Length: 448
Image 1 (cartoon, rainbow, N blue to C red):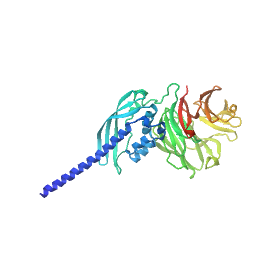
Image 2 (cartoon, rainbow, N blue to C red):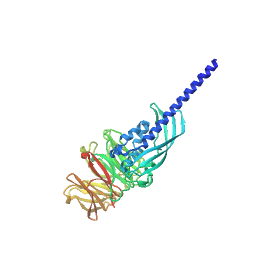
Image 3 (tube, one colour):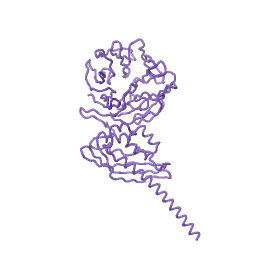
Image 4 (cartoon, helix red, strand yellow):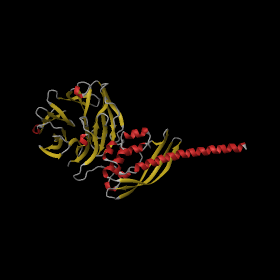
């Protein structure tokens, strides 16, 4: 009798163990199913353009957060690639996605982790009411946490419902934000526009830099691909970002005014992952200006502190291969102001005569551009090279509005009535102020 009782108890314990395991696996499977359901059911009318710039703090992305480990969500949110792409196309192209069927298959498992492969069918409904049925496949790994089962990697979710649908004729490896005839491309909505916002580009990549808390926005072929948000105090912030001439690296300068030191961090342009601290410096206050084929250009201030309390030394420096600063231009005894740099050529404005010149840092030759701001009667807000020392692009700002022009062959060519942000390899980026000037929509305009 005792033997039968022991066997019965063991059987019950084993049964309870199996039930516990099954319940645990059921919970993990339910988490994966709920995530996929929320990820692929997208109604563009429930979202707005502002959600793209808010991402990952928009309502739709925050709804996904509960399924993901805090560590992985924070990691993905520094780039926001997956989240931003998921939002951007449905919102801008005005289409909806509906999950029709879902099948989960267990790939592997152990005590505290489980991996599911999934395949599902979704229906994409476009603005003209046409529909596409698309099969998606991906992988969802989960780990057991104190808060239950959570997904610890979303990098293998299938986004081909965006990349392959016929109406946009998208090819993942090609340019995916090409303008139609006479149509400018919306890039993003941004908060304000201060003096420390900078736009830089090289090859296919562009970066919009925000000092302080915002961070940088990285674009490829006129499409926002990720952001890197600052996570630091005001006195220890990233102040500037530049892209390498090859277009595959981003350098960011981090400045600590209290400790009077700064450093350069190098990031991979494709995914925004930090690769190394390229240089750390103390004492001298150098400021990253531009990265061209000739090297990284820096300006220098006479002391540490807020800009209003410091003075710019009228010299330009290049950081050489030995990571030493080499003086390449001394304009101390001039009334010049540096406006832009391309390769080894520096565009300067004489603020007494309002005339613009090009200074060659290697030959020390000075060339007249035949361009002057004097006829306008006011200082120009921006003047830059437009991908060539022979073409300038500038913004004339009068009575609270901006107008952008090209100056080519001694002629001015009107481009658009908006505020200049920067250039790319084939066009200009400009801003339209909205919401009483507190926000701005940023657009790309193709220049033939």
